Amino acid sequence: MQEKGIKNKTYHLRSSMAFNVIGAIVLLMILFGLISCLIGAVSFTNSLKKEYSTTTYHMADTAALLVNGDHLDDYLAGKENAEYEITKGRLDVFCETIHVSLVYVIQVDQSDYGRFVSIFNSVDNTVDDSSYTPWELGHKRDTTNDEYRRKYKELYEQKAEYETVYRIKTTDGQHPHITTMVPVKNSAGDVVAILCMQRPIRELRNARKPYMIVIAVSTVLLAVIGSLLAGAFLRKQFVNPVQRISNEATRFSQENTKGEELGNLSRIKEISNLAKSIDTMENDMTSYVENLTSVTAEKERIGTELGLARSIQENSLQSVFPAFPDRTDFDIYALMDPAREVGGDFYHFRLIDDDHLALIIGDVSGKGIPAALVMMVTNILTSDRMRMGKTPAETLTFVNKDICERNRASMFVTEWVGVLELSTGKLIASNAGHEYPVLQRADGTFELIKDKHGLVIGGLEDTVYTEYELQMTPGTKLFVYTDGVPEATDAEDKMFGTDRMLDALNAHPEASPEQVLKNMQQAVNDFVKDAEQFDDLTMLCVEYKGK
Image 1 (cartoon, rainbow, N blue to C red):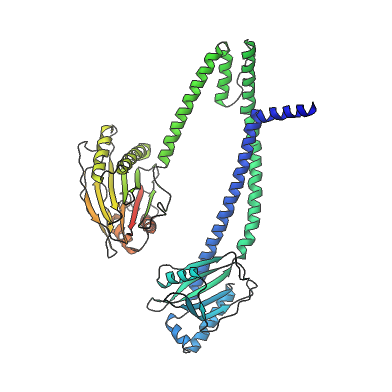
Image 2: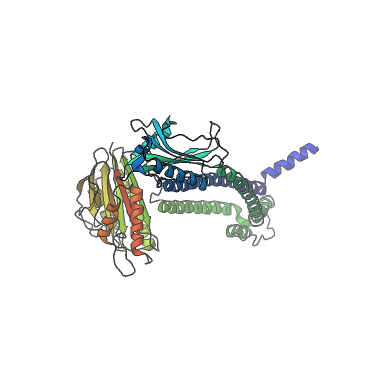
């Protein structure tokens, strides 16, 4: 009998609303805390690794300045011995001063980067209780592995400012470390050797353990406290009132008599209204239940639709990069820096198929919520039309007609639409009153393409747009933007202008699309300085790499 009573109590506990609601919240809060702990640990490790790599690069770059790249062959030939000894002494002092294990300079065989010869080699075994033996001048050795071979090649071909190799788990008896490599150049700017700096990273291991303990304890503790507080609130304002309502409904269904009024049971409006509804409608419970079910379903439907609309608006602009990590035939980046209010600018890009990339950028007149709504509608109409395989001109013609039919607020949109054929580099574009695009030519220079403008979207319903063709070659880029770039204004009401925009682009013609936009953003910020931002700053850049 006692065992049966325990089972009944356990069953009632597990089936009670308080146990299920509060128990679920407790579990979710603890799970959230553990996930936060894991994310924090990973972020901490990655941040520390990045910091180690960056600071070691700066130290290695400084050490490379001590080496005369014009005399390396002379050192190997036994010449310039006095200068060699001075440089070696400086590197030895530098190695000990900045507390790194190794600083060494090597010349790599550029035929396959599989061998190298040592020129300088400074060792400080006291830094990490290591047992390295310095290499003599002219010591030859095979490259450690393919990772080093690839990084040597990147540095010799000047495709990277520096390279870093992480050795968190070592198998040769050495302690965890990183090796950062920087090029050593001669007076002509050619890479003639590589300076390598090995730095222990025991701080990563030592710092991560207490960090994880603190984060784990803190998050779990906060999760438990939050769960208890949430549980207490829910019990008072939700669980207990609902239980009273449930008991009254059960009593009424059994007795069919008017009971004691429930009154205002909770600060939660829906629960309080439900209690009052039971008080006033006990004489017709069937109607009440049907009406309540209908109202609840309608509220859920409206809430779902509003949530979906809000989600669509928030995600109408792509912000995850790289956008197409599996594609090597092009690279793309875009950003929007809104002014004080919700932005009216927009951009969009998508693969229509494996060989065609759609590019869209636009600017809605005005600012605020009306402009944001028109922006979202125009963006959706345009991208959807492009997805159907329509040409840029056909797309703008359709979007203009659709906007004009419902444009009671007399708002207009400037928009540029293009389709890049990835197999050939051919770009078909159409312009509805938008800013001129900028194309990088084969020689690396950026120039303004003064294409023929059609009327703005929302102007005249019968407008028919035309299109034109541009040719991109592998390695060239296309830059499109809104008027917030050339019309950025400084404190003296001077505009940034297209000339400064082209100068900023041509200052770094080899930059990636992401860096192109960040360089432009920096150039605009340097120009306007402390002046208030006048308009949204929206840009898109695509680099065509070819097959």
